[in-house]
Length: 337
Ligand code: PEP
Ligand code: MN
Image 1: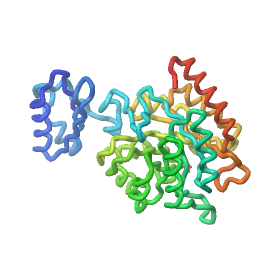
Image 2: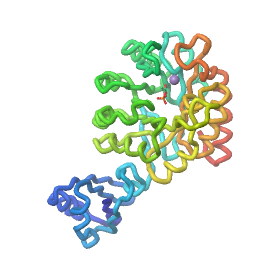
Image 3: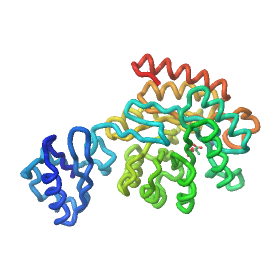
Image 4: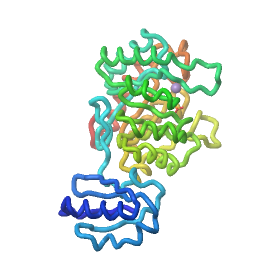
């Protein structure tokens, strides 16, 4: 149940609703919006429904939530969430180009890509120190040494960075370095990891599981939100379909669907969905045209030597050209980067 307060509801009105919820053993989650306060009620559904909420002073309406997720829904918060990533805003009209190597390999490799993407207009750097690989024999990342190199690149080029955390035991470590913590597609349903991230102060980028429905993905976001971390960015990274021409199918429709049902920002990852360099630009532009709040791409100065995902990495020059096209599409839609 979501209890929507009237714009003129007083602090006492809100406190009375919260107190009544507590008295029946339910948890009130108060969200103060620009116009009105909304109270999410978590607890026994029947018990909550038995209270005549609309008879309370200051209550405009009580809405039963039909969807399984509550806090990440538009009903709970009509206005878009704007996430602050180390000073860079994402969502609510703030567009984020995120780029960098898939994995941190060497300082030279990271710095070459970071400098190029910063000069071309990326606002957030990507690079991983922990790589979850399909094969246990593939390069798994440099761990803390990789995070140190990313922190040095942040200093040098003045851009915050996003890095993946794979194991709940590394959450503290990754949070102590990165500005935005990424949950990869393979971990979208790792609820222990999600809940742990929900108790952190760093924002989280939650990738869609490659076999997850949009509803399952939003439920995963709810795990993070519910623990108190409200800074969640969703990332559509492609789903497994019967199509074999691409690594995964970038579900462009997920962008407007998520925007309709959720207030969280959503970006697209054309690199890990398409899996091919030649598809990165068209898929990025499709995502921008569909209304994404940003995109994230793999950039490598020498993809032939890349330890991870070389075939899908674009060159620094290609990234600069892509940024020009992204600006043109955004301009055509009446927005600027
Ligand atoms: C990545 O972004 O580097 C990555 C591993 O992506 P995904 O989890 O979507 O496969
Ligand atoms: Mn990758």
